Image (cartoon, rainbow, N blue to C red; front, top):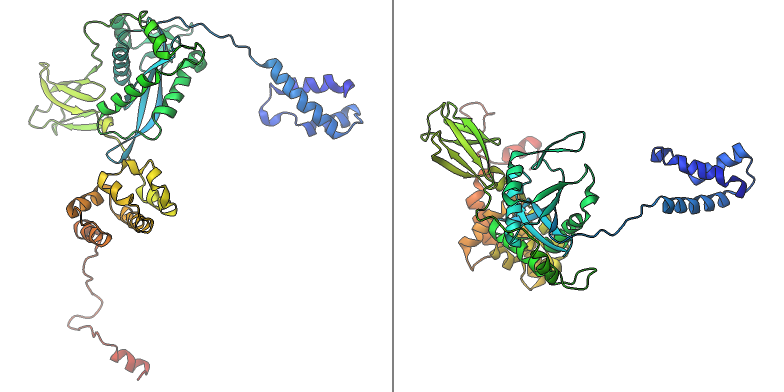
Length: 438
């Protein structure tokens, strides 16, 4: 191969500039050497050299990284997406993660979206968990903070984020576009948080409960050893805490103010949702809307409260495919007690399906599979509540049929084919005579 090595190396280097599917394979290199350069060796020799040389070239091009020193009091921030369960349904939630590379401590807060109000509220809650404010914080160029990036790299920030930075007095630093590796610590911490604190899927009854659960798991995580420094994360965090800025006496109130006009039906339109104000304000009236992360506060022109409603996205859910869940468990009934979805069922249904007797468990799974193909899980739960301790398959089926099944029963068939005045003969004798059957 020696006389041909430079030729092969040149082709391999040039391939880096071409689309992946238009690069030389080992076989194609052998064919070109044979046809264009009178190579007399074997294909296996070429393939071995190409494989070896590709590995060497990758090593030569590999980037060399330096271990960075992170000063105490410097943080990185990012959002990650996860699934949670509330009311026997799945919700897509966001988790804001604030990591401090010096101590490897993390503080988290869940929100239903990534808009500006959720972003600022989550940051504020993390600061309060810390008992202070990091001096310098790294961010992505998320729309909640950055309106536009100028050619020279200057950021045009949103008004809300500028006021938030001034209120808490920290320096905001932004990564280059599409350069998440510049804040690699929080990127890793996002994955760590989901793998360790959101598996199995968190089940909760209120947002406050969910936030408290994540905060407690982050606190307990600080008891482990730092991956490189030997001390516990909690000890390093205690040291780093002294470098934080003090919290302001008055917390920041994160909301946006918009205006709307009441239409002729006595309604206003907010975030693709119609809000009725009939009887509260006359058509044509102008209102102000305070958009908090979790609620909408509607004020009249005198800034007096008219109405307060939950923000629309806080109620968006996705149904769990219970029929498929129970059908899958029916194939492996012993796995019921290990199922993450079973934890999302109402308590009565959990007890019903986790019965010890395996044959009885199969029978109940079969029944649940059928019920869920027709009825909602809340309707099944209601039937269980009505029966109390006397639950069995026949009784539940009867109650569901009587209470919710009437809509599926067809109306009485009205026969309109026979001429008026005739009556149908419900006997087979006439048919038998016509066919000659005795």
